[in-house]
Length: 476
Image (cartoon, rainbow, N blue to C red; front, side):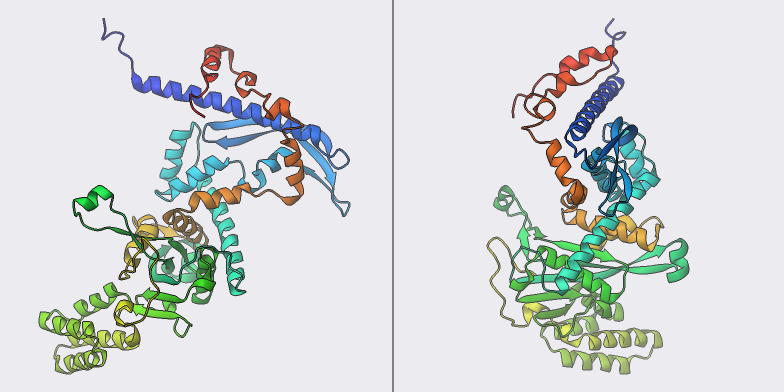
């Protein structure tokens, strides 16, 4: 008997979820209609002439919400006629298309983790509606272009020493590296099969992440970079450094920075030689790897590393020259010659900043100044893991737009930035939106007198669900 009445929890859960989404869509629709009515009632009738209602659809995390809103005709200061939907302007539709802010955030976060097609499938399964991979791609392009505008504006401010950053630090760590990505379509015809995407990060120190109980157990120390910012782009060296400075100046008060330590692999585009207050060092990983790759002789490797760590750089270069002369095999000789050229070109950067005897400002409380070399990990975690694997190919614009989202996500600034983008309303409609939400004038709909739970329209077949929706939370 019990077996015959067995409940399929999967189907039951899906049905409940579907009902909740349906209720949410009805509530969303009712609120939008009320909002539109208030905008209609409080508009400046001398400017906006009502021309009836039009239907539209807004894609949300609960599914598609179909609603009607008033359309108006108006004339600008030059006497030119136009039409406008005040409600669409109020909810930011001109900026976000037919996607709600919550849905855009979910799509942006998903595409940072998985391919567009898979992200669209996951979003569709969780939101009760169908999102195509093309729609997901379009959202990323729009968001990426807006972020690009912000970065360009920050770069302009930084070039005029008008950065808006507030984080203060006397010492700033910077690391740069590139990653080779495959191109597609017209980008391949113009740039070849692939192109290097430049990536830069900046941070002000290292903070231990172990919990107190782990410290008591004397577990291995783990650190994370603090106040990390990042940017990535396919653009040329000059434009990239301009963008990088803009990103840094948008978060850090650059006037307070006394020393900037730059860690790179020695690539010419990554160096900032001659800049005031800049200390350049060759990345320890790339430096030591170059020695290992140059020769398989353990004695030679040990001798070179010993000269390196005792800061005998001139003697190190002479030792490498002697190895070149002594080597008979042409292939091995070529490898050692490459090492000599690499070290000669980066002679002033071979010794890490901590071993140069430079007086550094004291680190802030809770932070440490450690050896640099986080770039290899960040290249993979920020760009490589999402954009490099499985033979992925990119256009220049498409790659840049996704990279901007990846950098924000890696530095925990994605949601904050996207909400700022979506919240920006056109200046000329700001007054109408404020009037529409004045609690003094619109109590019936949006003030304390409005009860969305009672006012909402629920299908007759699910009237019972309305009673459940009336249950208030036990906390506030």
